Length: 144
Image (cartoon, rainbow, N blue to C red; front, side):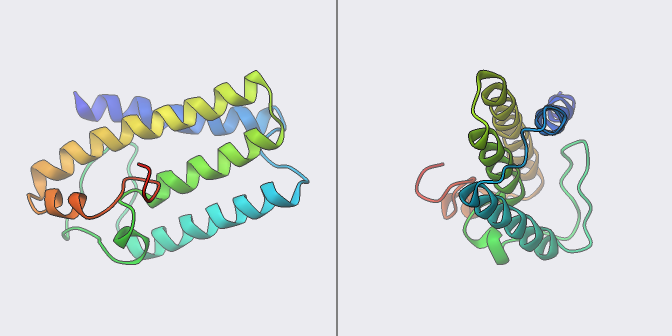
């Protein structure tokens, strides 16, 4: 059941981002938006490089090889989702409307769904995840 729900979360994130792109509201000429999106891209890249050769799956499925807790994972448990949310929300905020807000909300809600699914599945596979989770934030330090 969690794996099916995680697929819904995956396509929700992709759909929200693609909708902003289709509306030409993902990118902005404003320096603040550009800066936030560059930071989001760099966080994504850092997390992806830290994650190594492990692949990202459409279905939330814990990979072999133990927990990754270095790089940005030392501070937040889901830096890739944090980067995706920051990137899309910066674009949505740069072209604020109810439609862009809904797209940003879809990305955020879908990421939260994926996080719930992944954390449940990873905890079942790696019991030490509970201790790791107690010392890190999900996406935003000191907030969530």
